[in-house]
Length: 269
Image 1 (cartoon, one colour):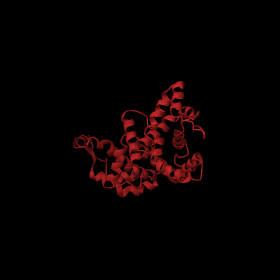
Image 2: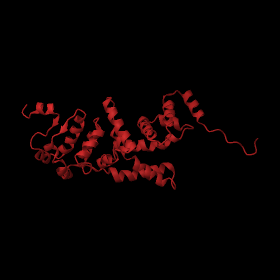
Image 3: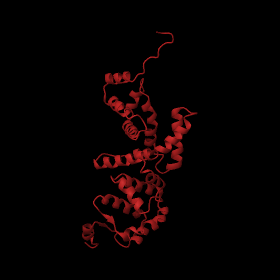
Image 4: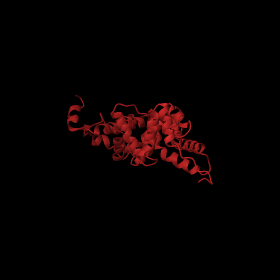
């Protein structure tokens, strides 16, 4: 035990091997990893040793020389290893709430809002249960407030779907840029968002087509989170869950049950 690891484990201490400032200068990404390890072990009572923690904030500008793609990947590791809420708390405690990566700044800023907090909790829960998590879902949750605001601002003078698509494009240009935003991750985020107004339509053939979408489950889970925070009627996810799992005959009955009654013809009665 050349680095006294057993002693540190007994004391519940996380310590950088070597001189911390020098190690951060060698590879500034270690700043983010120190936060991640601290968050992961915080539930067991571990804390980052003071000499390892003290240089973190002052070394933050060194991350400016790290490729954006690498920072993006490190951000996802912070948020998708089952300790997203603890990672946010560690970033705040270490004075790193801003400055690591623009999109991570948004996550930390919005972590206490009901919708993003629910998404972070859901991500931690799924990882804890051994279930897969997708970065597209969490990032779609984090940026939904921007998309919704742009969408609502356009609906007065544009049709629903073009207004939503234009709002999405604006958010991608402002928040995502070219790092991973134009590939599969970006496509999945767009699909989750553009699915949302389709949940409002419970008539005709539209529901049949929606539940057959490859990304239906992600869009539906997103819709459930919206209901959880009061953004949509809490009863709607139950209807869609029943419809999704039902056979065709039951689906027709479910559609009939929500069909509005025919309007009376003027002069009748």
